[in-house]
Amino acid sequence: MKTLGHWLASPWRRSAAAAVAGALPVLAFPAPSLWWCAYVALVPWLLLLRTAPTGKRAAYDGWCGGFGFMLAMHHWLLPSLNVFTFLIAALLGALWAPWGRLVRCLLGGLPSSSRVAVALLVLPSGWLAIELVRSWQGLGGPWGMLGSSQWQAEPALRLASVGGVWLLSYLLVAVNVAVAVLVAVRRARVPAMAGLVATAAATSAAWAFSPRPAVDGHVRIAVVQPGVIAGPDGRFDREEQLTRRLAGQDVDLIVWGESSVGFDLGDRPDLARRLADLSRATGADILVNVDARRSDKPGIYKSSVLVGPDGLTGERYDKMRLVPFGEYIPARSLLGWATSVGKAAGEDRRRGSQPIVMNVGDDLRVGPLVCFETAFPDMTRHLTREGVDVLIGQSSTSSFQHSWAPEQHASLAALRAAETGRPMVHATLTGVSAVYGPDGQRAGSWLGTDASAARVYDLPLAHGTTPYVRHGDWTVHAAMLILALWAAGEGGRALRIRRSAPEPRVRPVRTAHGSPARPGR
Image 1 (cartoon, rainbow, N blue to C red):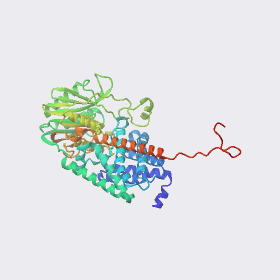
Image 2: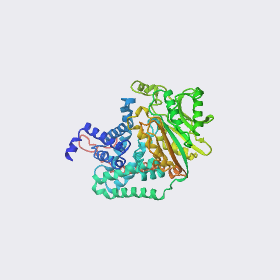
Image 3: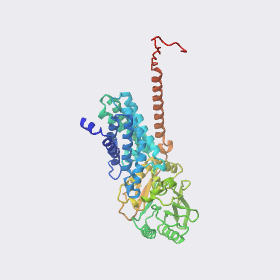
Image 4: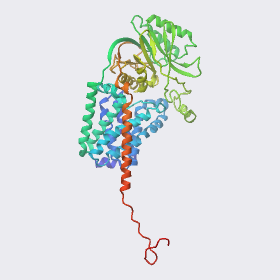
């Protein structure tokens, strides 16, 4: 330990260690998918933060750890954004600087049992405050929330139906804090064990008492994934070929991926007629995604468009939340230089104004989302409240085929399904495509990045309302209340200490003859 402490005495070595420690939780996400390591992945970082020599150093360690976490989570952006990826990671990593100082404040030195009990509530709340800030779409959205690493753990999916991915993040941080205390602070093991027992009890209660989706029907939905094909014409031809194979398979809806149609269908009636022919041949409506300049509005839109046997149905959803730098450049006048160092958007896409619930056939209602909109739990919760039967995400990860991005993206749909109690289809242009039932469990095998195929999935339909849909982000509200109460308590304690401090003694001023000076002289 002394050797390690001596090695960490160097500020540069300590910063490097913090960055590596901050990157460890990424192993819990796809593609490694070591979901179980999320329960201890924060421990090395916490131990480093609590031993920081000063509060300022703890803030630096928090920043460096946040930088490591953000860079590891978004490393697949390097081919597109190059050096700009490091700048983004550094800016977002700064959000963990106050958290680093908070860890040292609550766990530094030899914390008492009461201080550890407070830490088990406050530190997870601080982590949620960071995830709340970076969930703003202008900062990249809620990609890589700690709780989303648990997408394949059935008990975690049950918890997601109660408090969403926020509750999972909160409990994961609480478990890591408890483990760090068990490792480093012997005198406070009782509250640490109590925290672990409380987490286990919460999971058990959710498993036993939270309502389960009531399955009351089935629907057959087909996903068409053409794979990596250069040019919009060749891509459309391949999608048409794959879709024709679905004839006679009694499909209710066919879903194409993001940017599956590279032309505005208002300008290309020939393509609209070909899609209508496909709909008649298969006996199903087709949900395509158009990435093109609109003929009826200025600008480029990404739009989910429903086509039936008689042509365009009039059901259309324009993407609302755009990918920073990929589809628009924030403050383009200031950051427009990003286009010269990477594959940033040369022209900003236009935004839609509202979510849309589409009617498919006589009795199926679907809610489309485009690309990274599936990362936003509030969007799927809103669509569920509007009465959708199936959630649909149309995506394309063609720029990141050989990275962790496709699997990371596909895993998000499991959380959205579990949170809402609605099945979700994640259809991509180039993979990974995935489908999940209303409990968040896979409803069939994935279509990998090397697949060019059409596949039919039998999806159970469920109705009813999960606690998360009913009560919303109550975990976030509770966390913000905990932080406010703690801050108020600390402020009151500091004020009491200041008032109780004795008045400083002021020595009387003496004259040159040694006698006390009189007032006025």
